[in-house]
Image (tube, rainbow, N blue to C red; front, side):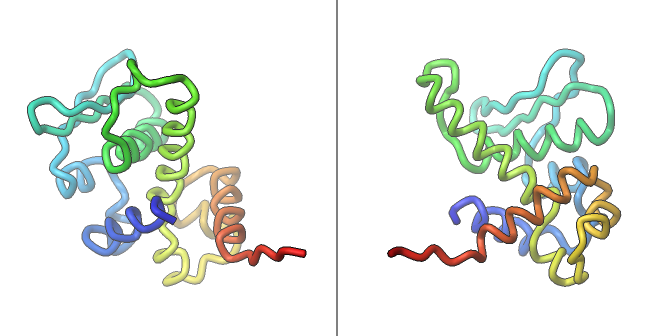
Length: 148
C-alpha cells in the first residue's frame, strides 16, 4: 500500500482532474527538470535537483515514461547500476505500478464513476489494455484473503 499512499498524496496536492495529468504540469508541481533526448528514459538527482530524461517520440510513450521515472524519483533512492539485478527488478515493478496509478488515479476514477475499462481509457486517454490493468489492480486491492 506504500505506492498507493504516495500516489494518493500527490493526487491530493496537485491533481484535480485529467487535465492535470501531463508532463509540464506535474514536472512543475514536482519541481523536476525534464531533459528531452533521443536515446533513453531515466531519472537522476544531481546536487539535489531531480531530473527526468525522456526519449522524444510518441506523446503517450513519453507520458508513460515520465510517470514511470517519477515512480523511481518518489520511491527509490538507490543507484541501479550498483544494485543486484533482483533488487532492480523489484524497483522496476514498483515504478511500473506507480506509473499506472499516477496515469489513472483511483480518486478520479471514483469521482467520475469510471467503472468500465473503456470509460477509464477514454477519460485518461490511455490504451484499453492499461485501463484493464488498472481495473484489475482496483479489484485486487479490495479482495479479502482467507486462511483455512
